[in-house]
Image (cartoon, rainbow, N blue to C red):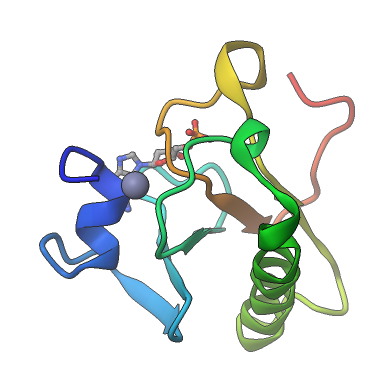
Amino acid sequence: MTDCLFCKMANGEIKPDVVYENEQLLAFRDLNPQAPVHILVIPKRHIATLNELTGDDDALLGSLSRAAAKIAADEGLAERGYRTLINCNADGGQTVFHIHLHLLGGRSMGWPPG
Ligand code: 5GP
Ligand code: ZN
């Protein structure tokens, strides 16, 4: 996807503040952090929303969650806790249409979310 912000990060055209990378995934700090730690974990392959996932993506989504847990541990959040979430479409608050998992931590999270 030539026109996608997160694809441009995945292919190196735009360089975010990367905290973790492997063959399939990239993780970088959010430009507008909503917590002391706010990191986005994305698949390098373009998938617009959760609605486009297929069974072929099951392992990829597992990897996304495991990468988030590893990054949380690296950031010193594992014991006190943190939140992960994926927004989908308008009501979910999605603004960038390339799947990304938010990792938020470093403060106590409220519930229910806004
Ligand atoms: P969404 O609302 O789609 O779930 O989350 C999109 C996230 O991407 C937002 O938290 C927003 O701050 C972040 N974001 C948007 N543009 C950029 C950018 O250019 N660089 C980085 N690092 N984050 C961005
Ligand atoms: Zn994309």
